[in-house]
Length: 435
Image (cartoon, helix red, strand yellow):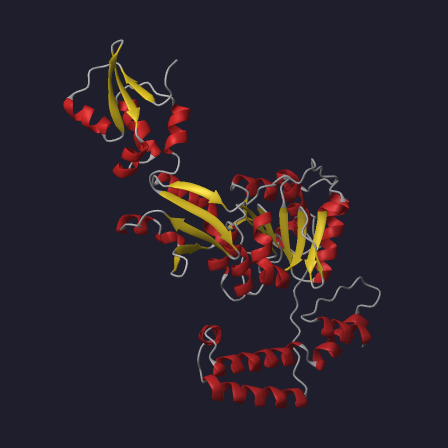
């Protein structure tokens, strides 16, 4: 019976080839026209060669060997990177010192060194690409993150509603982009249904991030109406109600605060209203999730703060966009006209606004708002105070009594028509409703 650790070479080996083989094996002798060698784990370890290196050498020498045994005996030798999930980061431990060339090749992943544990910290967003890159560089990856261990929803999801042509086209573009991207469609055009269709297409565990609690309920109702996903497979994650389920709907505040706890369970991330989410929280959620499939929903391919250039690529970039005018032209949205109605602050509101602006200028002068935001992130007291003042000034403008009065006039003038009123704040909406 053939010994599993013996390597047989039938052709003549020159001196250099013989010496190369002796780096990983011991010479046994000749038998039946073959030169026999026994693989030495110790020699392979000393040589610094990887399992793939040894296989390549044996192939070049046209050797006969037990591949399964070779993998068993050499497992753990060579360059190895161990990955484990330490909430909010993937911790990476190498069994060798990173040389200058390898550091350069891995620089795009923005690794941070943690001296206490002698590990590198990797943002989960980069997890899959990082592991693939290590493999290409000859580093064996031992993955102990347990990401996506149970990836399937456990049911075959059927979509019970018919997609409109542009919704179907948006879904196709997203699929073509490797199940990643931002779909930008106007309010009222059915972005949520596109996302629910994406859940049905993939059939994998999904985290949905929405703006408010009301949106949590709306999403649940849409999933219930449009699919056969059982209610027990849908969980809510916000405030006191926190249940992780195969499909979990979370407010962005809770997702931001608990992304380290949520991240390992989901291979599909949906972020609703990506044009409205606060930039720092959006970025933390996107970078904190290892999900390879991502879908962002937006009413516009732009953000008012201009950070769509930085943030939207974290979801895969804009893959589909239709304007309200385009959908109105083909009859999917009602024809519309945009009329800007300007109002003035009430005298008391104006006085308060000017007082706040004066204090704001005393604190930060003519500094750009982006500079103030950056200073606030560093914890500078004057910048933090300036942001509070800016928020109060913005609220005075958005909550002005003049707006409430003007909306009342418009509603009275259009009495008998169907009217929908959008407001910046719930409090403002209540005041309009009570006026």
